[in-house]
Amino acid sequence: MKYIFSGFLGLIITAIFFSLQGCGGDSSDKPVTNDTIVVGDSIQQQIVALTGKIADDPENADLYHERAKLFLLKSQIDEASEDMRKVISIDTTKIEYFITLTDVYFLTGRAGLAKAAIEKGLSIDPKNVDALLKVAELMLYFSDQRKCIEKVNEALTINKDAAKGYFLRGFALKELGDTAKAINDFQLTVDKDPEYYHAYIQLALLFSIKKNPLAVEYFDNALNLNPQSVEAWYGIGMYYQETGDYNKAFEAYNNLLAIDPNNKFAHYNMGFIHFQYLEVYAEAAKHFGNAILADSNYIEAIYMRGLSREKLGDLNNAEVDYHHALRLRENYDKALMGISRIEELKRK
Image (cartoon, rainbow, N blue to C red; front, side, top):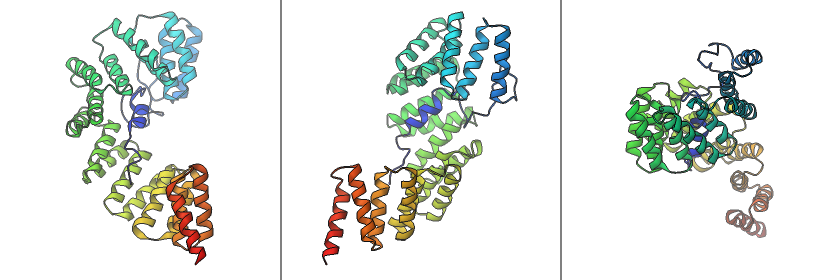
């Protein structure tokens, strides 16, 4: 079995690009602190309050900017984009505007414009740490890890306490295969900011690869910050699955499914444990079936349910699953071999 998160960059891009809080877990319910937003109000209440202020002062770029950031926190990208268009039409002198505009462009699929926006921001203030780190984030997206590290180092010479810088450099080093230095940078991240959720996740994943029990401690640290973390519960489940503690693996996957009942990977992995290690084929078939309910095109789960049914002697339903898999992937070798086995058994 491989980690679903072995190619973790997709999740991390969502988390580190455009997380206006800079760190921590789910920020959707966290208040933003600045001069125009009342701390403690819900995000929607803050948006309503800002909308009232904008009505009274419609040429105040700062108000639109603050509302755009709140829209981003609520994943209301179109509304954020509209506010940022208004901001830039009023004022192009503040680097903070271009940092947020970079986020908006990226989230609307315009990575080239995002890069141009942050370069414009840096032309206003070449020593702005947030802008330098935003460039570093973009370099990760463009798979230019060395340029990312270069920009991070530039930022850290200005502010050696910038936790996000250590995190980005750690991630770039991980992508380059230098896991020892990556671990060091992720540890520096949490030293600088003990609430940096994604650094704990990265540390946990790297220690999981080594089957080191520190992995569970780091996942637990992440869960302390975000108890609803699907990736942390999945990682704990995988750690225990790979180290042979199947009861704890099931416990972790069940905790994950309490949060995300349709998580096909958790269902699949529970089926895989029952099939591969426990040889309880009826339970395996049930869990693979749940994975298929979550994703009707999950070909691996369809094949494995067929294999489980074959082990149970339910040859007709096994054959149905193998043919289903073949409809999804022509010449799928495992399914073809399954059908061949069943035809031979039926001839006997």
